[in-house]
Amino acid sequence: MHRASELRRRTIRTSAAWLGFVLTLFFLGALIGSIGAYRIKRVCALKRVQRRALTWDTIRGQSASTHAQHMHVRTLFQLRNSSYRVPISKSRPLALEPNGNAALHAQISPIELPLYGSLVHIGMYATTIEIDGSPYTLSVDTGSSSLAVITSVCDACPAGKRRLQVDEDRTLHCGSRTAPLGDPPETFSCEPDQHGICDGRGHCIYQIRYGDGTAFNGRYVAGMVGAAGRAAPMVFGGIESAQGRSPDVFGSGIEGMLGLAYPGLSCNPLCTLPFFETLLQHRLVPEDVFSLCVSDEQGRLVLGAMDSRMDPMEIRWTPIVHHLFYDIELEHVYIDGHDAGIANRHSAFVDSGTTLIALSTGAFAAFRDYLRAHYCHIPYVCPDNAQEPSILDHAACASYSPEEVRQFPNLTFTLAGAGNLTLTPLQYFVRVDNPPEPTFYCMGIAEEPSLGPSYGVEAILGLVWLRNFFTVYDRAHKRIGFQSARGCIPFTTTHPTGSGSTSDQDEPRSSAPSGHRSETTLFGSIGIFIRKHANVLLFIMVPLLVTSVALWFGLWYYRKRRRLLQSTGDTEANQAMVALRIEQDANG
Image 1 (cartoon, rainbow, N blue to C red):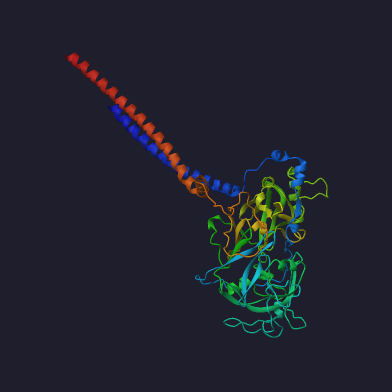
Image 2: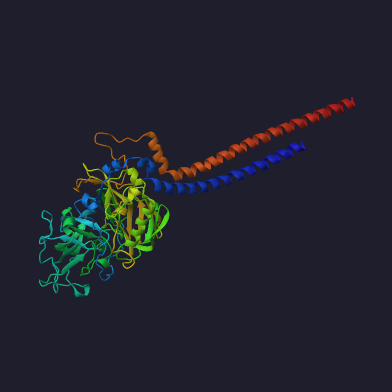
């Protein structure tokens, strides 16, 4: 009996030990599940847009004559009737301290504006604002600060566009003030202490020049400027003449420029308050924040807040280095995980006024050399001679198939504070659908000779970059945030943008053909749910699995010990009975 009691005590101690072991496994499983969920979510985010690629051996099986018949090379300029803009050498005026007031009322709502445009056929995106109650379509440019609109006296501007009617009462002069605007009323003049210069007619001169050769000249005018029914008095440029590529810009339906960079760039030569600062100063938007998203031929601009579709937990923040352009630190660029020496802690601009991803001569040479050293099996990467076309020529396009595009390497950009942001080939190539022409893919990375160490900037992250992210310009905290874009929700409003379309999506298309319904299978829905909630499922399932295994093993061990205890007890009872009978026989 003493041995049976000892076995019971051992069983209790063993059960307590197993309980502690199970709890330890539970917390360990929760930790492993959290780490695993984070890793899987990162991998899914990097692989979401990738598809299964054919091997080069499969493609190489085609005859050379077949490739010669079906592969064509053109430039992006030939595929659209408007040359692409790379506004790099924006005017560099004297700095002007912002005088906007950030203490805004919480009840003020942000202003949400649709964007219209095209990466290929226009090379920019535009939105509509009101000037003195009339709508004007302006190109949205985060690489400049000036607001400028074509006027009725602009002879170089195309006919048929809305033109601003200017009069002497609204024109800025030297020595006299404009007619009062707004409530309370405000007046403006061309002040020498703000670098104002007047011409022979006494008009305050407006001049701005961009790095692509575009130049505007005219006069400064004043008016009530705003959006979504909110307006404030503002001084801006009235375009009277245009040079360079300006007629191509206006020919795309654009009636002016809307700069959203810092006030230090808004001296042309008169230093004025930019559009967004004017909204902040008059408390027409709640915060010194705006966000931008572009997708195919549409997009969205939110003034005064982060886009409501952004997830604050998914945003990757990087600090703004200088407060003229949106200048961030580009630490490295990796090609399929290899540091090709493209950049090493250099600055990069985030600029919606630039179409492609522009690299300095040295950085682009490193990119080109790496491709030609490792990817010559892809057509048009390594031409046989200098006269043959190459996909690495400036803005070159080729009639690649999606499988051939996928053979190009991934590019990973390391931003200070934000870590690694990766673009797949389908994300940095620009797809051009323009029937009856074949589908072309254009290289979205180009060389820009004016960049480099002497300029202080190694790269410009243009629309090819921006279309892959929701981008929030948090100027209040001096930072820019990126969140991987899952497609900007299209606006129901229609706007003419051109006959063709662009897409960075692989077949099949996200939209169903006319006359067919887009259906999602049950297994597809389950797969989407699992990918979307992978972190939660792993956090729950891994500990439950570990706990279930531990409890099952503990139950099996307990039952084994119980059978052993019963067997031991029966043996001791039998021995006692035998001993009793022997004793009884001996006494009898």
